[in-house]
Length: 297
Image (cartoon, rainbow, N blue to C red; front, side, top):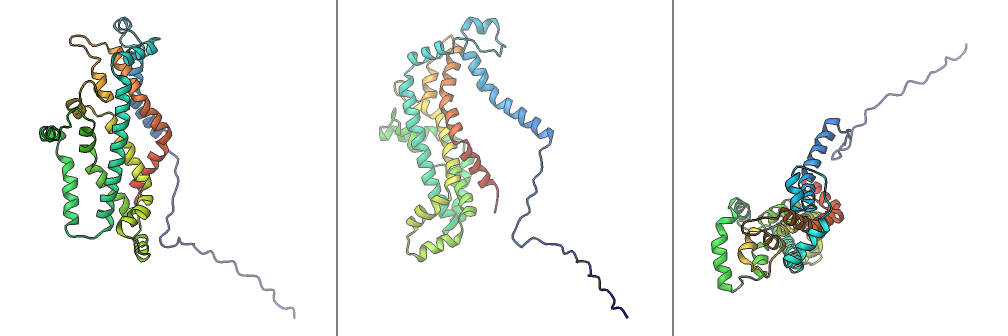
């Protein structure tokens, strides 16, 4: 008798389940509608700057003859030179750089310290104090102008850049942002490890929390720099015409009964150029900070 041939049993297919705690990310290609919407948003965002450049590159006669033309003229350099010589442009530029940089650094530092305390430290009244800080964002800025002006007058800071820097050194939004960011980005195990090594709370913040908060701090610093750079209301009230920031200096281009829009918008383009350069070099860090702060986990 011949021995029966044994055929191998078919291999059973097992469904591979993802490990616990892992994520399956499915990449989907954006639809044409999404690209159309993004293109509309891009054009709508860039149009005001382009319109300012178009008007700032013409003279008054060309603006009157064809006010709706989107083709730039050939007088931008001439208008820019007029702006620089008419107002204290370079002094205002230096003041804006000093004020915006100092405010951005102070806001990032104090907001990171407060965010670290609210997110990782345990103390009585923590939640109530955080709610109070967030609630101050609902108070209009205009309500505090008169008391703030009185305080600056008592200190003798009217006309000084310190009157613009110090009231903006702390931001309620910055505290809220850094609290949420550090709550997700900074593991408790790192803090415990630093305490085991004998580090103080301040040392833990400087060596552990601040490096972990770098993307979020970069985003907060950029937004604070931009908001301070374009701030007009309070600097216009507290600063002297001879010691202005850029938005206050550009206001001097408006005469009592006549506004030369070519000069005004040419000055606006000059004021926006540093911000454009900043976005070119720091845009990637900005997007990274926003995404890491928006995605939980």
